[in-house]
Amino acid sequence: MTRYCVDPVRHELIATWGTGEGDLATRIATVPTGTDLAALSRLAGALTQLSTAAWRTYTHPASAADSLEVNSEGWRREEERKAFDEVTAAVTTPNLPQGGSMIVEYSPVLENAHRVGRALIALDIPDLTEAIRAETTVELAAVESAELGDLTGRAQQAVLLSREGASPAQVSAADRLLQEDPFGPAALYSDIDPTAAAVAAAHWLYAAAEAVSEASGYAPTEVIREADNIEALPHATPTLVLELLDNGVSPYDAVTGLVRHAMRVADGVLPDPAAVREQLDEDEEMIIEYDDDSEEADDVLTGIRLTPLDPRRPAHDLLEDLLTGINGCWLLHQEYAEDEDRDDDEEESDDETAERHQHHSRAQFAALVRAIAADNRDRLV
Image (cartoon, rainbow, N blue to C red):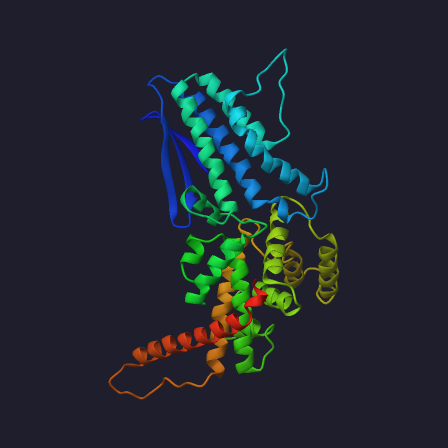
């Protein structure tokens, strides 16, 4: 979301937003000296809340809901997105108190637009009002651009957000980046929506798992656990994704399902009570083996998780784990692949030889993964 703030020295209203490589800022308006800064701060707060509500329509799209029937969650999301068309009118002519009462909109987007309008009336600065009308148009246009997969300009802040769905354009862009570097280039974090990047990464992880499976004899669903014996890895989530893909779930459904589940947990909802009950039953059976006062029993109880992802940043967490999983596949592949690059050149130090060998090994593995990913591209699209 875009955050709005006040520079009390320069009497400026400023908009700031994050990107994958730091924050950006722009001046929205300069107000006359003597302007009530408290009132200007209230305007900044209302604008921030409007931006938050608008970007929620991006992170929680109607297309990701189970149903679009009237009064369903999907229907409410759809109606909220339609409210964009009424924002300018709400800012221009907001609801005002009449007869001791005031209309309050059900839509967070619309209600916050009315709050912006009321804050502008309180300030009564025509130039500021015009600047804010233009600013709200820019902000909503950024959300619309992100929905279409265009993360340029202010829409770049979408790279910091977890989304329940993924734009096909963004998935394709992530896939192209992984073709260049199957281990995950930096641009995957700075230029791509993290959910879309994770969808593509899941496809490439499975290709990497198949590559090492052929060399090692382990099933694709077992390779990350085996790699964990070589180097400590967050193996649980990548293994879960591999199991889903191995059972025929598409990368899109596997990733968006996990992200959506974690986002609902972050919203204070328990998405799958039956699964939690099953986990509790399994843990209770394990606890029976321990004494009531044992630390092991406490560890089991406190280790119960509602989601395998970090609910504060689920898409980013998943993307990081999947890329780490690809690296883990390479580690295991090294153990079984024939070493064609080592020599006993006495002029090179051991470190130089090891570095050269590692570079060659990664390049060979990347080429192998590219071939498998290309042969199975239908799994991604």
